[in-house]
Length: 187
Length: 189
Image 1 (cartoon, rainbow over the protein chains, first blue to last red):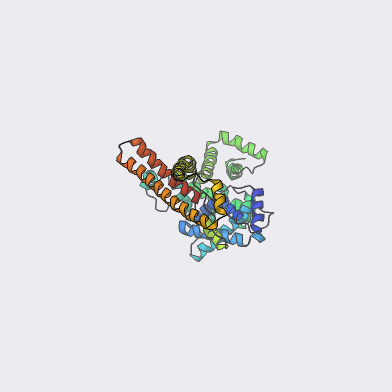
Image 2: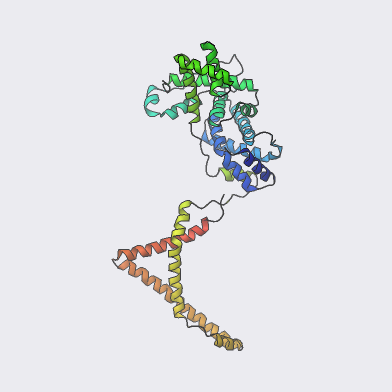
């Protein structure tokens, strides 16, 4: 991930209409944004469209960006909102997890024993188990462990209190742990 | 702290959020409690397994599409490394090839007499005639050069000399690469 100072310089150049600065920001974050959205929506074509929308929205409102916050947090927030809008529009379930009446299904998604042991590599198994989590859980795991965002940055990105970040992350890890033990990835 | 207290703090330990004294206490407990140690190791494995998942690359046109939506023209693609290398290696050979042809053209032309040119310049009608003469002569010279190149190719094809054939093939290939390199090596990201 690019440094904060470098991002701020690029943002200033973007505000002045410098095309190369836009291009550099895209190059700096397109893999992270695309990967996050891909893991949210589970489809590469949709993920690419949504990642493009994310950058277009960000750049069109770049003058509204507050330099007090890291640029990548702002970008992740736009990616998060774009993905959630898409999932809502496509009527995906389990977008919120705060509702205690909404039990979370942590069963395997049709993985046979053969798939577990022969056809799928360990990374593919982990990817599948991650994909089987409800979107808020898989998103917070990716933000914390793959994108290495701090609790504060996750709270800013998802627009939730830090206490909620802690609880959600705790729960997401627990479910993921159970799944990986159950599928034999972890002994 | 008992095991329940410890397990409630494992997440914070993993994220480095526990105060130093509590972290020390939890670590001491982990050393002597296999159950809690297993829980902690599983948490670390969850974190590590997600962190180790790949980052995916969007399509090649991704940047262009975003920039186009903002009203920009696509940026020129950077030259590929292999093209730059081949251009670097091929340029001297291509220059040799060009020089050889230029020599053939030059050798068919008479050396221009500067004094004669000045005298002709004073008489426009004779200058025009001279220019026409040299234009025709240049045409013959170019024709000679083309015949020379064709003869060289014919010789290379007919002869059984592998080095000659390889030399000719490399000259032509590098000349083409030089042309392609000029087209692709302009601006870059």
